Image (cartoon, rainbow, N blue to C red; front, side, top):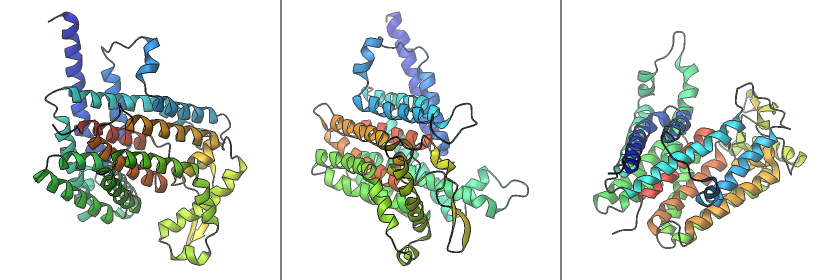
Length: 412
C-alpha cells in the first residue's frame, strides 16, 4: 500500500471512530435538553480536520451546494445586523458569530455521516435505529416515573425542590421529544424498507414517539409528527411532488408569517380565552410582533433584538408574563422582526435551492425523498410553533437528522 493511501486509511478510521462516539453521545445530549448536540457535532468536525487535505480554493465553490451558500449568506446578514441591534451580548462570541462558525462545523459532521455510505460494512444505519430506540426509552422512563432518570443522573442540589427544577426538566424532555420527531422520518423509512418485522418496528416506533409527545404535552411535536407522516404517505406515491411541496410550505411559512401575526391581532378576547394557555401566549406574542415588524420591515431590528422586548402583561391571573420571551415561537416572525425582508428572502432562496437540488436528476433516490419529505414537513411545523430560529442546538439537530437520510438507498 502506498504511504498516501495508508495515511488516508488511518484518517478515515479515525473519523469513523469519532463519528461512532458522536452517535453514542447523541441521545444523551438530546435528553439533556439538546444543547450538547451542537457541541458534539462541532467537535467531530474539528477532529476530522486533523490530517485532512483541503481542496484547492478554486474548487471549493463547485463542491459546496448553492443552498449552503444561501444559508451562509443569511447567517452573515444576521451577523451584519448586529450592528444596529439593540441587544449587546456580553459573551466572547455573540450568538450570530457562534452560528457563522458553528453551522459549517455541523455541516462538516453531516459530510462525515454521508461519507459512510461508500463503505460496505456501514454500522451507522443500525446505530441510528439504536439511538432512536434509546432516546424513546429514556424519555418515556422520565415521563412515566416523575423524571426519575434525570434525577438519578442529576440529583436535586441542596435546598433545591422539584418545584424549582421542574420547569427545566419539562423543557429538556420537550426538546428531546422534538429531536425524536426529527429522527422519526429517516429511522422509520429505513426500518420500513426492511419489510416484515422492519415495518412492524417502524409503526411501533412512531406510536411510541406519538405517545411520548402526548405525555410531554409537546403540541408542536405532535403536529410535526402528524404532518410528517402525511407527507411521507404522499411521497410514497409522488416523492418529488411531496418533497418540493414540503420546501414550498416551509418557504411560505417564512414569507407570509406577517399574515399570521396580523390574524392574531384580529382575534377577540373571547376566542383567545378559549385557547390552551400556551397558545393564548403565542397569540399575544404574535400580536406584539406584528407592530414590531411594521417598524423595520426591510432590514429588521437586528440579530437577537427580541431579547430586548421587555413588555409584560397579565394573562389568566399570571402577572408579569413576557409578551415576547427570548424568541417568538415562530421562525418566520423571528426572521421578519430581526433581519427583515432581506433575511426572509435569503432563507427562502436557500429553501428553493435545497428543494431543487434534492429533487433534481442528481438528487436523492426515491426512498430517501420519502424520508426527506417527512423531515422537511415536521421541521417546518415545529419551527413555526416552538423554537427560536437562531438556536444552535436546533440547527445541529436538523442537520444531523437530515444527514442520516443518506442511509436510505434504492432497494437492490
